[in-house]
Image 1 (cartoon, rainbow, N blue to C red):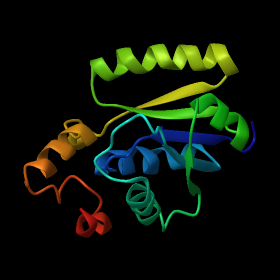
Image 2: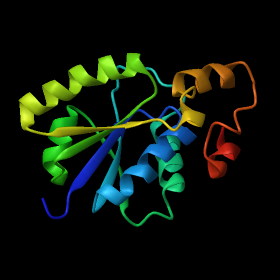
Image 3: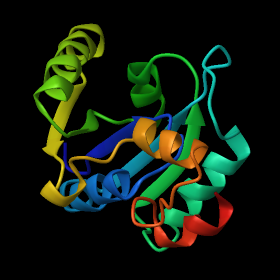
Length: 154
């Protein structure tokens, strides 16, 4: 693949500095990175789709190699539709690895799509959207955990 495309899927409820770090570290590996927000009407999110998309677009506005979009269904189907041969996943710990490895093997089996694992930067390994949502629900300051331009909208 001379111009590989990578897909970075997620719910991004909300996007964190850990997500941004993974995408920026993956950029040198790909001609384009598609940051794709999965939309699942049965999944309850804290923030609506419009707000999460606005945050994603703002977070990567200065990255010409990043395309932001939504998708429904299987990630491998999204990969086929955008011509991506790779899925990018960040790993914070061994629990993430065990979970993500099983999905990666299935994606490879289903569609021949490879998964690239990037370990979280040590300073981001404790950050998850779940934890950020809990902090927000309890009115804690999350400004150090979310991208700068997104703090205002939370």
